[in-house]
Image 1 (cartoon, rainbow, N blue to C red):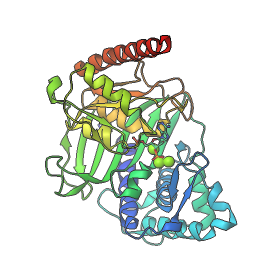
Image 2: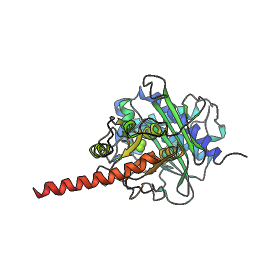
Image 3: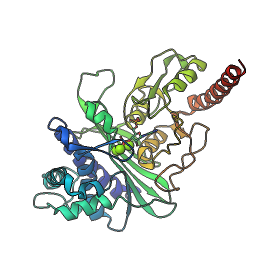
Image 4: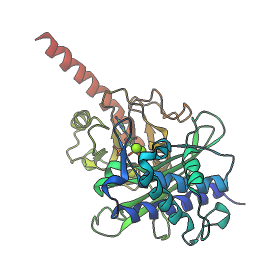
Length: 358
Ligand SMILES: Nc1ncnc2c1ncn2[C@@H]1O[C@H](COP(=O)(O)O)[C@@H](OP(=O)(O)O)[C@H]1O
Ligand SMILES: [Mg+2]
Ligand SMILES: [Mg+2]
Ligand SMILES: [Mg+2]
């Protein structure tokens, strides 16, 4: 008897590996005009667009009726002023789609020599990611490059793909081309693939396809914890994180890295707590920034909630709705962090009202 979601897992791995090959091959060739600034002022590159085109094309061949919630859309590429960028996206996506079949690939997923697509087909594939999300049915969520700012700096980023049924994440696959295979050897080999299936555990392998190793979050003493947090102070309230660390008497420096690589690091025991506190702009977290990572951590024995201890709700649309921040950690540590956050908020409020009385 085959395990649940075996095909979804295989297809997701194949798609993420192809997208990782693409993104890592273009980094050194990326030139200045191969990026745009989106309406929310965030960057997007030819890598984000072409990786979304590739993954969406593969998913649409393997599972034609499935919905996809992807971060990017093709509107900016359809503008004539961006025609050079659009041509580059088409070229890169086709290079990735037609590359030879690797172990685990299947020609029926629309990949391999001779499988190039027209520009219109690839723009359409990108826009298949425009689904609004929701509570019921089969659905994928895709972040073709999570941590675009990290990607542009040559630091951490991740290609993230999750499969959900009735808004519950069942499969999560993340490729981290720049992540050291072993955190204790930061200059050693890089490039990791993380895979989780609900009820079947979490695992890591190298991007070049070594045997998987099973991941379990170890038990931590407070003195052994490093917070894992964003590099970007615009994405996470780093001062508030430091306040929480002081309450917990955590003395080790935080580890700052971009993208869902933080969930991956946590799952394999590099850190202890992923803390993401809102910066106060009313930003709503996106489902593609957390779906695959949260399953990986849960399958490694951890717990993922918002900063008030509420479960993340992936059934509300493209965002996590009212969820407020994200906390991921091993179960024991997690409950201590939630209490410390409550205390940190009370302290902050008391300081504010104290200073307003002066
Ligand atoms: N104000 C904000 N607060 C929280 N997250 C934000 C944000 N603005 C952008 N982001 C998200 O932060 C993600 C990167 O997270 P991190 O800081 O952990 O690397 C971005 O993903 P992309 O890079 O895929 O756009 C983006 O979705
Ligand atoms: Mg983005
Ligand atoms: Mg993202
Ligand atoms: Mg992204």
